[in-house]
Amino acid sequence: MIFMSSDQIYGASHGTEPHREGSERRPETVYGKDKLRAEEAMFTYLKDGVALRLSWMYDYPSEGRVGGRDFLHQLVGAVEKGASLTLPVHDYRGITYVWEVIRRMEAVLELPGGVYNMGSGNGLNTYETGCKFLETLGYSQYSSQLVKREEQRFASWPRNLTMNTDKIQSHGILLSDTLKGIEICCSDYGIAGAGRAGGMQGGVRSMSRGKIPPKALRICGYTLLCLIIMLGVAAANKARGGEHLVKEYTVEGEQPRHVKFENMPADDAQLAAAWYFKYVGLGQYDMCRRLFPGDQLEALNFEQSQAKDREGRFIEEYVVLDFKTLEPEAYKELRESYESKAETYGYQEYKVVRVHFTQKWTEKALESAPQWGDGEFTRDFAVGKPKGIRKGWKIFELGMM
Image (tube, rainbow, N blue to C red; front, side, top):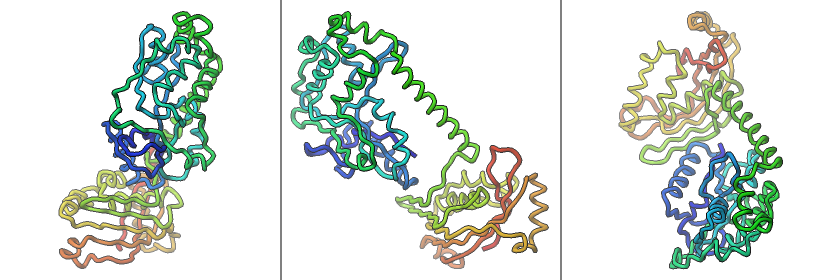
């Protein structure tokens, strides 16, 4: 999973140096706080997830696309209306051309799990950056009319959202700095020097209301192709159950839980057994119900398991050591029963998966039912493949431990 986070996580942090991934995190805004909570939630369940802390981004306003509140839209709006835009001088942040990020997303897919700062560097304050953007667009002669200095905002505590990107650069992913980014944007859209070409009002009409140039259309085409591929992958994932199993899950809090897979399942039949340990181990009984035929749910009585969880009586740790798909000879005494049930449920085929694992109960569970016990066990799972391609394998028989 790749989560798009934000430089707003650094918020009110002390210091003037660009923030590293391990720097103090003190988000001021609701947006920044929500991004930080989302990061933490992702890494609770997905240790190999990737969080990209992105800076403020922009694209060029073009005909047929709804405008936004990004930096370049605001500047172009000021030019178009002949109005002034007030920009703070005590605000420091990178401002990134969005295509600088998009063009590097293929490389991002190869990143190992972790947090990465991803954005253009910038040594100027926001007011100075606005003046430089206007200069690149060809409006430097109008900058004193178009942008005004905001001296009060952040004066008592200058805001620093700049980010050090050494970590992501070590993986070969380099972005242009903020001033180079606006040059690339102008080149992509073919609008460099628009102000010099037609004055303040004439130039902006060629900019904000012009047709999207061929180079930008090609970029949009590539993006559309990527979206189609992503939708195809999402559909395939949905057909397999819509979730990707990872090696380790940890839940912290009043009722901590831990599920770890020393070895991962080799096929979909083994995966069904793996989901059982993941869902039971994390108390996700609604998900666990989906692993079984509907007529078995009453006997499984997940409601009772949920009640015991609320009382603090549950398995707090599963460590799955390995999976083994058994040959028919290994379960010959139960083969007739398995085949009969598989036929009753209309499965295309079935397999028997043996799982070797350790479990650890909470202290409260051991006090009330010590016969359960901690230790190392094996358990067989008879799993069947339903007809059709959109359904995962079902567990139709839970063996004794």
